[in-house]
Amino acid sequence: MKSAKEFAIWLHERFREVKSGVYLTKTDIAMLSGRQRFTHEFITDIHYELALKGMGFVTDTHREKFYLFHLPTEYWQAQGDRYQEDSQSNVRTIVQNKRHTS
Image 1 (tube, rainbow, N blue to C red):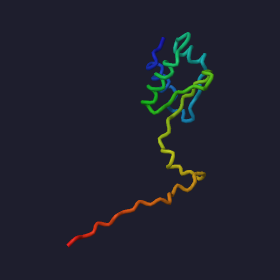
Image 2: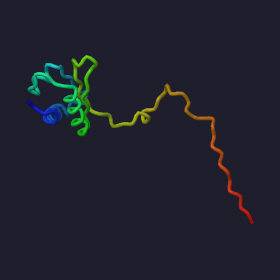
Image 3: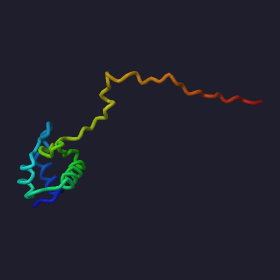
Image 4: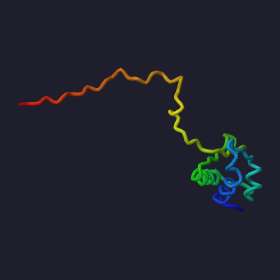
């Protein structure tokens, strides 16, 4: 039986070159990890270990498919948002000029 860390290392070594990512089924994980059943904490620990290497590991709501993918490196605003409303505020800060006293 592999630990979460061992399984994460194996996943990373095996699939790090697959830029589109892969998914695994519950049966796949049980077979590949040598576990008959696994907990949510096991999946969370796998995700933690993979995140250190720039990858993510999440599941769907039914816990039937588990997704392995590369974590994005680009901040969302760098893409621009053509649907975003004008964020220019009409509120301006009043800057008080310092008056020189003589």
